[in-house]
Length: 462
Ligand SMILES: Cc1ncc(COP(=O)(O)O)c(C=O)c1O
Image (cartoon, rainbow, N blue to C red):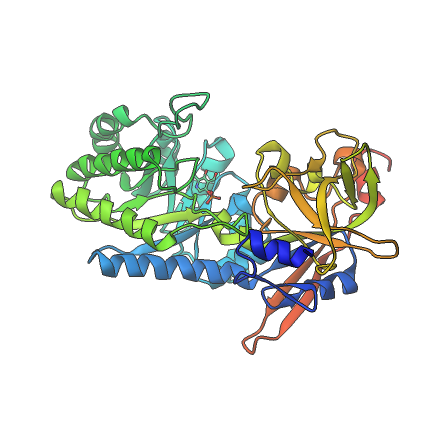
């Protein structure tokens, strides 16, 4: 059996995103080797059309769920900037109609820059999450005072509001984040983020309502395990919607339920997730709980990060060397590093879709992939569903390129981008792929591979 037969028999390959023509891999409509032949490896690749595709997909799924459940509210898609702060990501998301969720002070200058470039208007929703230090609060107040009317700080604790009370010139909108209980087996019972369930109603009645000019608009919730069809998720979710109803009975301005992020992405060729079913169940649950409490159904906001940008990214490596280190452990050494370039793979044990770009008709065998740093954790050797990974054998004179796909979220936020990293492994080249209205693909070099000068400079070797 050759590698292609093996993949076709053990996974759902070919998929909507991946297919093979003449034993070469295509990612969407891109022959991935074209990118490598033009720019070389190691190489980060961002396939921009996927960003707008997923934003539109979420909009359609909520619209379907609203129709199916005769839901009276509306849906707003916010992009969680921390999953990838690049301008090309934000611009693609904004063009596709996304609003924004922020998590720290430097997000705000980034929003100002997009405003100066006319990529967004003052009416856009800016949902400001996170524990806020003085600068972040100051930046939020400045936006509100300058007329960004839908810039809404979400209170992470009960003291945060004092800054807005003294800083905002007029009445101002706010949200409250609910501290969810963590899943069974986690290191803590309750998230450190947000305000306790049991404090929220009292806090609103006794402090916010009588003493501030704040207008409570949003109740916010985020389960760090993401949106999954588990008992834990639905228990937390139901509790959250019940709390919304209790609060809504006291507060007419409260009209938005923010479900946070956590919509999963495809991290394996065998991935299956009933997006339509789960979104419909979310909407139906909100409607049912609200109507049994005689409370109007809220508008629904989400803050999808991974779902927006994860499936747009890929990283491509050449196999530099094929090492047999004992009787059965074969190492394929890549021209990059998991430690620095795919940090989720070792720090969070996350997996990505791994496929070769060529040699599909060759025999295959079990391999370990090794990175260039000296760290013993710089390896990758399991799939999400399998204990082993398999790649084509490389005969003398052949060379192989591999790709990790759907790597577009969080890898730069966690691993950094440029600068000083383990063993001074440089950040790879980064190429953007776009598609015009006629379907013509264009490639553009966003950033060249990092050179020694920037590193030496940071290290003080001026
Ligand atoms: C408050 C909040 N919203 C949204 C997100 C985005 O989550 P995801 O990337 O899983 O969609 C996060 C991620 O940590 C978050 O903390």
